[in-house]
Image (cartoon, rainbow, N blue to C red):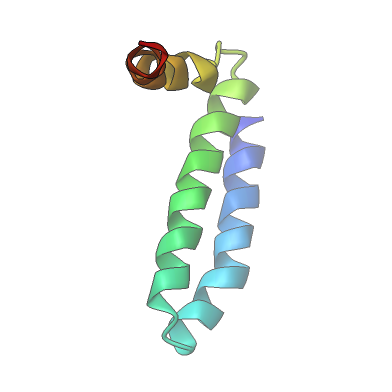
Length: 72
């Protein structure tokens, strides 16, 4: 399954990246690469049945002090 996911990502890269480079759309290429890396970071552990951390936990850690400060 990991190989299938990697092939899918390679196909997506092969379709999208040449057009972005040809048109010199560097910001879009950067955003595409960032989102693709996030997608791979989530999908590959999922195919290996590894637990994926909940992003709400990290958001809560960041914003809890701010909410406590605003409540005062």
